[in-house]
Length: 160
Image (tube, rainbow, N blue to C red; front, side, top):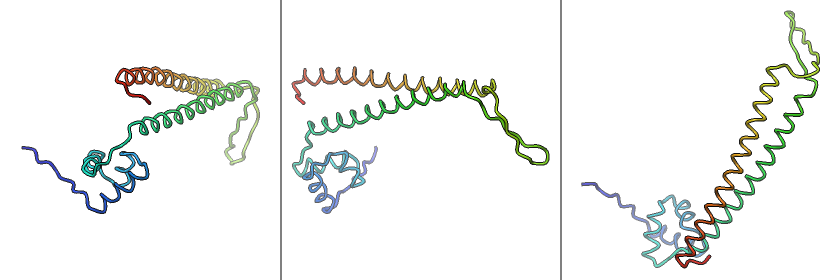
């Protein structure tokens, strides 16, 4: 028979749960602050008659999702900008350097990059473009998922 571990919460921790709850902290936030599991904090919050506002949690989740979408949009733009800069390098003179046997540094400029450098630049451009497309797909899937979840919550009569 499996034994269950009981994680007793001290009176000081219970007081801290009350205090953090009064500050409007979420269940997850309180659990992280106290280094306790969500289920332990929820159990003691229930025993103390405390509840967590799901509307506030949903709003916080939406805010975090919006922040993440903004970061992805910025990252997509930066990836596209970097890809454009790399493409420009394909048509610029390319410095080549070497050292003689005596250790003398030699440098000269080629009209364009060598084939291996062009291949590396094109690979980097392709990766940047693909990652930008991947981020766009994440946003499209997020929008579709949000709509499905919102519709489901509305059918349950949950307003947000």
